Length: 126
Image 1 (cartoon, rainbow, N blue to C red):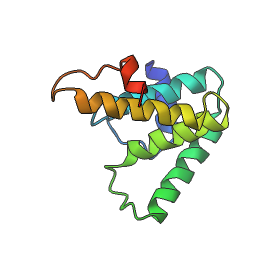
Image 2: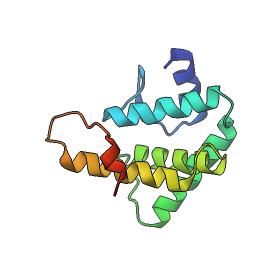
Image 3: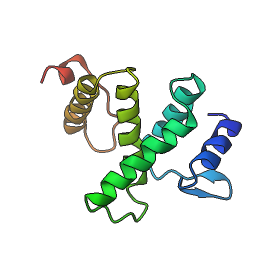
């Protein structure tokens, strides 16, 4: 991820958790979700205005459902907004997203703690 792209994202979406050096991630998947948004934006899939609106809508929805908005769930909202936006834009379907999420859950269930999770064909057979 380029420094300029990260700076642009943190300026466009002020609620991104950050420190003096830029965005702060509590887990690798958060950084990956962040990078996916930057990459899709750079490729013209959506504008920053569209992204900010999708993220704001997801946070509003979550808060309405009782999310305490402590910052611990921020990247869960980020990921949900990304999934919604790519499905809306036709990059993929909601069904495909659910298929991969289910396969990932299956792979995680069979993976010993501390080992990398690897998707296999049988993870999709459920």
